[in-house]
Length: 324
Image (cartoon, one colour):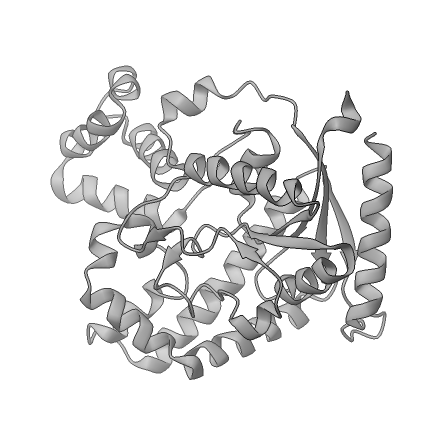
């Protein structure tokens, strides 16, 4: 029975760790196709800020789950799982290996559990915004927002328990499901996949942070500011709260609105990205299904790509065999 489960390879880790390029090399080595596992790359028009792979970076390897929705249309984790499951079946039907690539741990977790949710993501900036809304508009106004999307939870939480109201709203905005539904899904199903999940590990955090700084500078050279300006002008950030919280865009809005200098905005962007990378490492580090591969040599240099591909391919094969 177990051997009938579909094989998957997933390359995960913090932003700027080199997931995209390694996934392409692995796809060529193993006969695979790549499925994005990134909650922002699903949006059309959000290309530079999400580090969406270019045609050159794809190197002829089929990529899926990119540009699934307009940027002003919220797209939930549950919708991602449904789309990803369908693509996995399609890729496998062609005899190819589905290779997930991305850093959105919540999406990967839900997919590997067949749609179940172990826990929901947190978003400190969103939480702060919700508390500020309650301070400005009152507890009842915040509670009414919850009642409109999750009447079941609203009925169970008093309007003056602002902390719980905020948490219930945060669950909905980050996962796309209500708190009451998340509670019902708390019983975790067995995974329908034989998944080899490989995490890219940087022992020297400073090296990763240096790569993040270089990536931000490259994004700006590639037109990140212009992309953000176009999304702002189109009203995307007003209509889609998820897009409005996307790192790479929200940090530039202050500059575009004339509230701070570009240098300050860019520094905040680098800081926010480093913090996001730290949260990603914490998330994946707590998942027992992640097997880590060290990306650097003892001297602190990035290991040759082919060497990493050899190690990851061998490790994945051992994991698949252990799960048969």
